[in-house]
Every structure is written in structure tokens, then in C-alpha cells.
Image 1 (cartoon, rainbow, N blue to C red):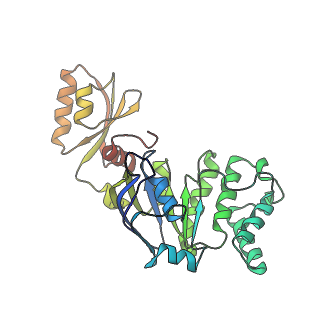
Image 2: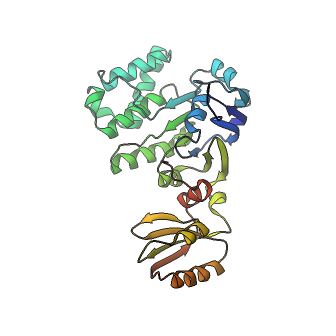
Image 3: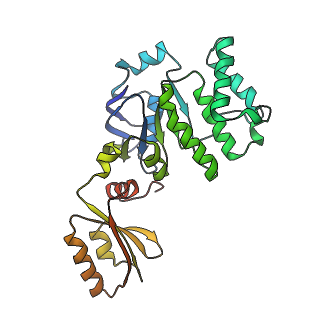
Length: 303
């Protein structure tokens, strides 16, 4: 559906490019996760896809048509739901939806139909007469999403859509987003919450410093020959061992580690004994998405 081929972008006077030879293939009919630390290039890529920036190098196509031509033929093909609230706080929910539906140029009957569908999808029926500034954080996120769905976009760009919401609202938003491909909307999903991406995304790309570090289905990315472990000690893990095993500090003397083979597990236990560290718990198993991310980038999403 969406193809990004060798795209690079450098902001004026920037010392380094924001994107460097990025290539992605986002198929139709799914939820595609985009991960990366702050400054990795995610916002730049989303801005290019949304038409807010123009790629200096490389090509972007939608359904085998150059992106500029595809957007000109159907301005509603791609919709962006930004992390910031994209509505007018002094207007009611109904007024906001009516305004943005009008801005899309929807005909009267279609406008009413689209607004009703967006309200039903986001379950906003009980608050249509409330001003947006009076809504809870969860309802504001649902209004953001409802506005993004007006016009029935082929591709929906979601940038941190669950920030600042309670667990119940987050669960509702995730279930709703996961259901969008069934109605014909493909989703590009960015989040700082790894568990969200694992829960709803079929494919994932990990970016850092403007480059794609890894891309593929979740099963392929997590099916590695490396073994992972979580260990709890009675003290901090010695620095030399932390570096050797690409350790992630999980707090409270707990650490995530990576092993090339099970032989390394036994060696680590011997090294810990020599260092005077007592092992309280040790769990060995397959890596999760957060562990893969930390191994590739050596830093957290919020760095």
C-alpha cells in the first residue's frame, strides 16, 4: 500500500540528516508500528507522509502512485492524528466534528453520515454537547481519533494516541485502533509504550538516528537465536558484566540480559559469584520487543 524507498531528509542548517536512506513497505489491512527514541526521525517521517514536508531524496508512493499525485487525486487518503490535541477547546464535540468535516469538503449528507459514524466509533454520544476543554484526557484522545477518521482515510497516521489517558481509556483506544483495518483503514502507529505495539501491530520498524535498524513482522523480529534473561541480584550488576551482556537496568537490582548461547548463562553465574553478587531470581526466555529495542539502540524510547 505505502512504499517508502530510499528517503532522506535534512533540515536547514542541521549538522546531520533527520532521515538517511529510509525504506519501508507498509502493506494494506493492518497496524504497522513505528518505534524509535526521541530524535530518531519518526516525526520527520510522519510529516513527510502527511504532506507537511517534501522529501529531498527518495520516493514515497501510495498504492503504486507517487504520494503527491495520490494526495491530489484523493486529499482524504491520508489522515494524521497528532500527539497534540488537534481540535478547538472552546467548541463542543459536535461543533468540532462539524467544522473538520466541513474543512474536508464533505457533502451535506455524507458529512452527517461521517460525523455520526465517528461519534459511534469513539463512543462520544454522551458528550457531543460538551466543550472539548471540559473533557477528560481519555475523551479528548477519543475526539482526536474521531476527527482523524472523518473522510474515511485509507491510511491513518497515529502519533502517541494514548498519552495521558487512564488504563480503561487506553484499553478502549487500543481495541478500537486494532479494529480499524477491518473497515478498510490501514494504521501507522507510533508509541512509547512497547506493550501497545506488541498488542496491536503486525509489523514493526525500529528507527534510530534517521536509519532503519530493523523491520519485519513481530514474530520474525522476536524469533532470534539470542536468549534473553531477567536477573535479580542483591546489589548492582558490575559495569564490565553489564556491558558484556548488553544489560538493561530494570530497577531494584533487576537487569535484562542477552546471551548468544545457554553456555553464557553458566559463565555469567560463575562471574557473578567471583564478583560477590548473590542471585535472587533468574528467568531465561525469549526476548520481548522492549529488550530487542534496547539491544539495537542501546537506549530507551524516551532518551
